[in-house]
Length: 225
Image 1 (cartoon, rainbow, N blue to C red):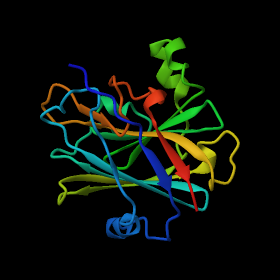
Image 2 (image 1 turned 120 degrees about the vertical axis):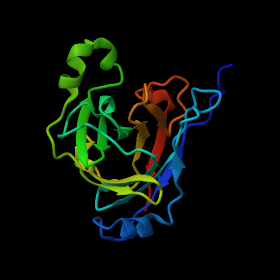
Image 3 (image 1 turned 30 degrees about the vertical axis):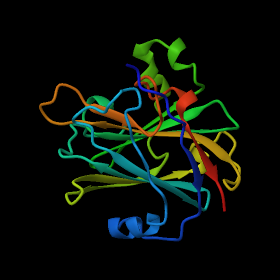
């Protein structure tokens, strides 16, 4: 039996007070008032036995989007050694898809354990389908430095945490003040376990197929003061 589709997630993204982004405790305090959204496997009737959730919170300040994710994970691992590698083939990774309503282009930003970053940009939602697979990764790749992140292994979860600070100008073709704007979004993860045959994937979006680029199922991020 196919799972019943659920409604896409809508978030009111509110301003954050200043906080120490290098301290996990300070980050948790800053986001404590924000209701989390969680990853799911909506394309399945029931989650895989190995599924572990992630909890994601958002906020903004000074034209920057902040994303804070807490990822339950019994085996935090990756073989990635540098930025802009194919993280999803190498171990754990947390993924952020973002597209302002005013444009067709969207970005896909990853953070892997060790605070490694992958940065991709796609001209529109159909670009992947009309691009040869062997050219897609290199054609979408962006130079490093599009966003700032921190990553921590937190054995009390157990798992790991990610904080990403994403400037407006790294996502928008023509940046405008965030307040009052809307973005499509999706947060996803690859949860790998050493020795397992395949990663466990999940998303905050109610995807009816395990394809994270399906924008019709992404959520909506509403920037409000």
